[in-house]
Length: 343
Image (tube, rainbow, N blue to C red; front, side, top):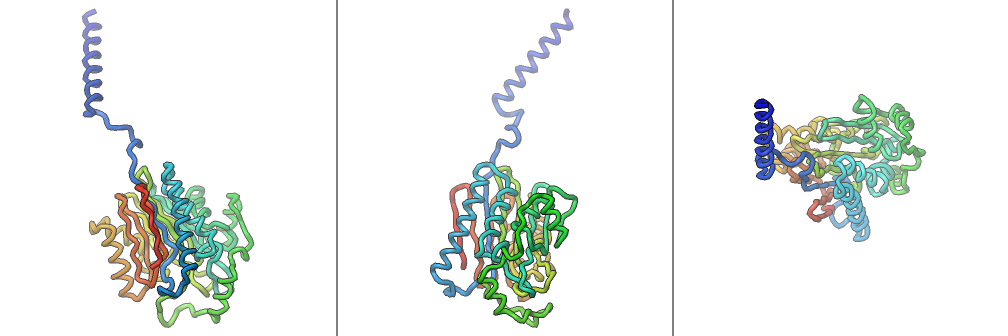
């Protein structure tokens, strides 16, 4: 009996101590997942762009309206507790379906007058990534890229193999002519003969359209990035740019930031731009905005390479640097702040 009494007393003392700690909050933290981070969404519709004043007021408004619509869709995902992955895929799918941008329907055409599409997506929480390249019949390449990430042990599939996989995943497939718009066809005809594989000079682009991308920070503090493109007008058949290459045009890590790049892809590949952004932050300790400036305004400008990027860091800071005439871009926050711009 004395042993039993001793056990009971010990139990009562333990219970009293635990209750006191719970009341003061000194022993146990709030359950994991209850704390919510302010979410952030940043998007782009390409860099290069027109010289200010060359778009009509109506044309400018059309782009701004579509950028706002894309932000609204992505914001809807994030504001309802959706993941950053879901948000960036939703935004990029919408922009792939919009003929104003160089991704999906309305993509630029290669030397043979055909649209060849690239896309990539990356999860900052797990470091997993997926990409497709040189596809011609997948309606939404960004969704195929996500399936590669989630349903295979690979990172990138290209051409016929990627399309076979997309069909097996029951993704929507279309005839290659679906992507061609009258405006793109006219621009392709005007651009012929196709440029050589190695242009003699790298002049700033006056193309109105460009690669699309999105980066996001969700309520759980997870980052994600997605990018989709039709590449360069008149490009060689089979040419792959930076967009689907993890670390070049697309990158995300919860330790640092999420990045989607746009511009002259060959330079972005050689400079591993998206990963370099993260590395500058992680190893040099540079803040997000400074890292973006180093890459876009210093490194790439010194190489006479044009382009830009969008990025959000783990703390919700954003940056959207570019060294071209314009960049179609915008952002939204959980605070209700939303803004889009071209120049």
